[in-house]
Length: 430
Image (tube, rainbow, N blue to C red; front, side, top):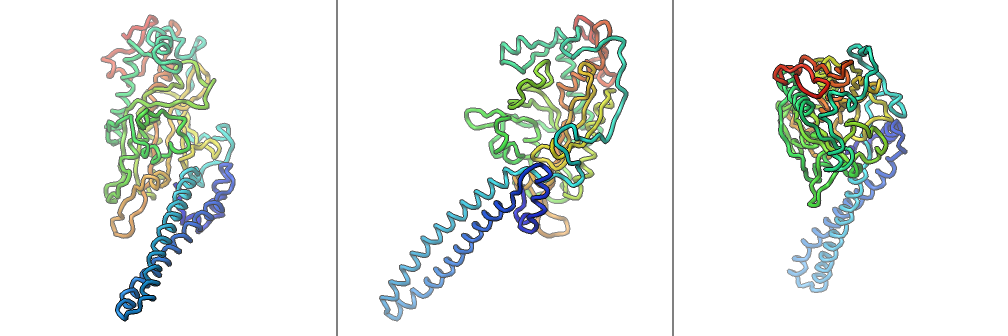
């Protein structure tokens, strides 16, 4: 959510920042509602002062026996009370309109990100590894002989419909090993706090991180009002919802491995083959809560944490900074990390690491108290995949596929597989 005082102070700068996203000017509408709200508040305060003055004079009129004045003043007090109540209701209505409007407007893009229309205008800032050369034509994950026995889309469709998968045997074991490996690296090497969170949340938590009100169709809601999380960003970030932290409590760095649920609204026809885009998937999610002056450095640190997982797995990747046209609505700046998939002969996103600034903190009312005293300040929040487990599995098996249909597995995973190093062409972990 945006700071109304900042918009009041420099509406032109606010509109200019939104224009970088291709959004029409909003400040005039915002300030008109704000002015109406403030006018109602001022009128209520004026009426309250008049009511207080009249109330003081009622006793004096009664004491000197002036019944006419007494009745006039008493009627005036009653009239003013009704006027004040009406004005307060009107002010609350304007305040709700203002809040709804500020909630619906996307975050302002960081000054350092490139302008652009879509993903074609993203800018590469880092690259790691060499694209592997195969003596044969590599295939996509679901066509690798070693993987076919353990990746069942037909049974999953019978159970749940399209865009689900049932993993078994060696593939299920590999999936579990990847998640455990990621958690261990983030906890033991990167200093994140491992956290187990619910996957069902109250509606206000979805508002807190910006999934609502605008993107409700992208998630699933239960009949009793809970929402299934699209990512542990929702639960981890909302740990500080409504809190005022001590400055020395920051930064807070969390990591969680959870199931995630997305309706994939608007993605019909995209990545329908295999398990690249699913309604239910698993992710290891990182969230940091920092002071404002630390968030840029924290963004780079978190990007490094995600990149480290791919480097330990020996996977080629590139990192891009998203342009204004590809930037998520709630974020100021995002680094997308794209892993090389031989089966598709291209890089595909496996992590997005983003800084929201104080946009989520204002929605959650999450602040910290400066050590030197002074007014509490809003924290900054950041989030990033560390990594999407299913996409990591795809990358591992596609890059490790062999001419005989087997898959060689990265050395970093061998301890998590009890020393097993490959999946045979018939799907056995050996």
